[in-house]
Image (cartoon, each protein chain N blue to C red):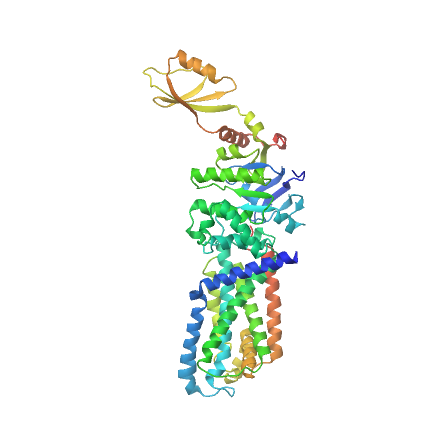
Length: 256
Length: 317
């Protein structure tokens, strides 16, 4: 039985990875170009006038945030568009008729989202090295926050796809929720620059904790408690997983 | 052949959220090795039944057993026995033919190497091997149907359900698909088929079930059903005559000059008819049946069911 589930999981994961690699011009190239522009404009041109932030050059300060931004966006988008397309084209039925449990379906799709998130994260990291030199403060925090955040946003993308009924529905959340939260999550600035009230408000944004946790791994500086970062990550992960599992298991949007 | 039925549906009910009662407690047993036709008009409940068996529709109540495995309590074993060829194309059109079939093998736990071997086997049998690296969207309608059959067979199920497998394919491909289905049925795979081509059901299937308004109104052997055939309509082409034609005792109508439809029932036979045609000096050029016997029966049964309250007692087996 375990062998069946393991093979099924690998099959879904392989299908997902093949999908985003096949359309690499739509999946891997855009974040590389977008992040290169961020590095050139915000890091190089404007950043040189901003001066240091948290004891690091502005370029070095924004690198972790930009990597995390691309990981969040790509993990989310990959699962959301792939699962919704499978629903839309009805090829999700290939999985529903087969003896594949809901846990394996979730893990397979999330695995695909994590793979794309990490691929783009690595590509953006390589691009950033062309602009700034830095040493990683703690690989443990880098890997942990990167993986957990990627899993979390893959689950969020899956949740979006389960509810989505049209292609509009899979672009609304990224446009109106994810992008503002990411931009206001401290990618380009330290929370200490904000007035006290807005610092307090920012702490309701979960992305703040993920970006700061990742920045700590890279630079050894953070605006928030690391315990809080991992607590928030675990809390959202468990919550989202249970919601997604319940919805898929009950056949929401999949079975009539 | 196994004595365990290939499929058992016990008091199967489905009520959709909008209140529509699609299935009203269907009981059906399909024996292992059978070639079974599930017929019914659009909206009768065929697709809902197939959807429940294949886990794509959630049942309201009842029980489904596939080769003795309960779909609720022994879901993995039950699903492993079943292959489904759905009515609509439901593969990813951007994946290649080989990817679609091999990945499906993976979902049933076939290691990649074995899945690729099986994919080659079935793609060759179904004449799709040359197209293995083509994107599915580039295939013709007939090829897409065959792709779905290859995908359904990759885990070598004991029960294959085909929901209108020959819809929209040309007659040559249809006949080759019939041959293939007969061949795998002879090899021991139980087949359940829904189709709107009644000639197809008559030619392939040994047993037949007719669903109407969410109830199984007939469940019998094809031979028994056809033996109950009360009438058959034939079309005669003849040399047109200047005087009106009267064929006493026959229900007939002139379709156009030189062509008439005559209903032959248990009260009369073809010998008597030709005797009468000779008497009337009608020179027959050709003769053919208007529709298949099953088609006439099917229409009669549905019409009768609409006017008479259906009772469980009219189920033959």
